[in-house]
Amino acid sequence: MSTDSPGTAPGTPAAPAAQPAPASASQPAGQSPAASSPATADPAPAGTTEAVAAPIGAATAPAPLGQSTAQRPTKDALGTGRRKTSVARVRLRPGTGQITINSREFTEYFPNLQDQLQVLAPLQRTEQSGKVDVIIRVHGGGPTGQSGACKLGIARALKVFDPLLEPILREANLLTRDGRMKERKKYGLRGARRGTQFSKR
Image (cartoon, rainbow, N blue to C red):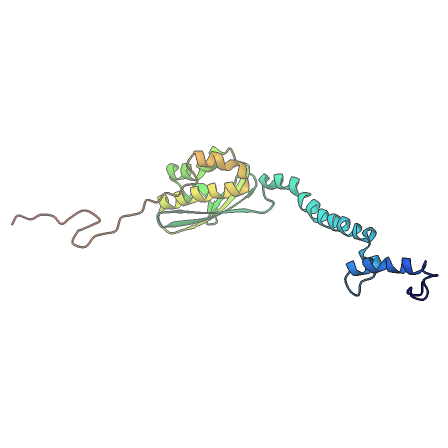
């Protein structure tokens, strides 16, 4: 019994003193045992899950509002049309069907019936005549080119005004620009293709 270290008799407190040693070895230096306890480790992931779930719920909340994008805009719908060398800027808004071109009445600016039908084609095809007001600024070219430019500009403005009208306009080929232009003159000829007149003498 003389080989035992002194204080063997009160060895009961020494046994509990050896138990915290493995627990302190498993935790990082400078960290209290309370920080590594499972009771405090569980709430941290739970709080993280709630913090992530909140932005996801906020992002999905406006999803039903996306269905209202097909509704008509509150401000004016704009469209640009081109034909030959003419360019038309169209502004479309809800109204009574009044059409103004370069601050003049529609029938006064285009007295030719064929040009009038060109301009009215998108409105009549979509049944919007008398429901919207159209304000157009057009320049360049002649009556045929300007009426074609107005037609394309109105069709594009209607697509912005009500996206549900796009299939109707697309089926009627009203959203496609007419790319036909005047062919350039060639040197040595009198025009684009006509040559000089042959003279025998």
